[in-house]
Image (cartoon, rainbow, N blue to C red; front, side, top):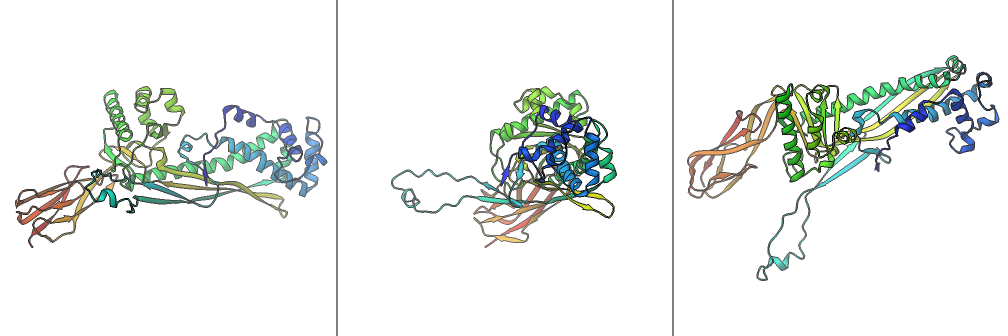
Length: 450
């Protein structure tokens, strides 16, 4: 079961990051009475209220009782430390790509539905108008599974000596906790950000985005041309259903509220925020604040200018973010492990467009199959085209037919269905030309006979 994440407010952030050593110790001391204890230990029975006068005394109590210190460290890191980290987890701008949290299980099943073909058969003399009452019409249903695929652990150790030093002044315990938790958190933060960037690269290289070539926005003219194109396609995605903008080829549209644009810092500096925001029907402030505009320092693949997509294309969910510990009495060290599990995947059903420069990729060859076929006059043949290339490239093709005697009505549809006229003869050449380059093509010949 997936749920949406909660984002802390700036006021809550300030509250947890400004705690003194006294605040932290007293919060743990009173945890059992307040019903918020992680360990279940009643620290109020053993230590006095923490003040400037009693801080070091409390530290000595912990140093003299290893088992008691173990409980304090567990409470300190798991309750106070994790609270601070959890309130900071959603500050990274790439975290707005998360869909929520996977609370149960390890797999999310995404289901998408195609369109239903309408009928116009209300006339009483049409048999189907009566008979189809009992017919079974199954919808076009497709599904995709997204599994936990990011499982990392971050080990670190806390020594008894370090704990003792933390009980010296008003800020020492907070500083100690900040340092310990920041080390683990920042390590995870770097890995998570790289994983999200890698997901963008995988999507771009494997057909989850529809590629459109554009010049890199470097000045006013190229910046305006880029914004104009973004506005055009944001309207295209939201005003009608299309099959070419998602990997599964399902008829799909994206409401403006679900559209996001991902920009590099370089491209963002060359565009006008207010004009770009207008393309997403938002004010400049809302456009940035709501996460509709997401910035990366740089894209992980060459030639990418921007990504415009449905925010649901990124199927990213938290699953586990927790701490485990064990005390090693041999060297008097607490060994901690921060565990982070996530689902980092992409939807084949959601719309996405990647704007690229001409050096991002190229089409190298197109193969049309099947080959060497014979079709009777008046018959049909379904053909397909496989587009090969390097880098980021489009796999769309434009079909055409040629021949000496095509007859009247020989044609080919947009999806490759060849219809041979009744009066056609000889051979027909079927050509598929790349819509991405307009130059690379592949062909096959069909013999008309019977």
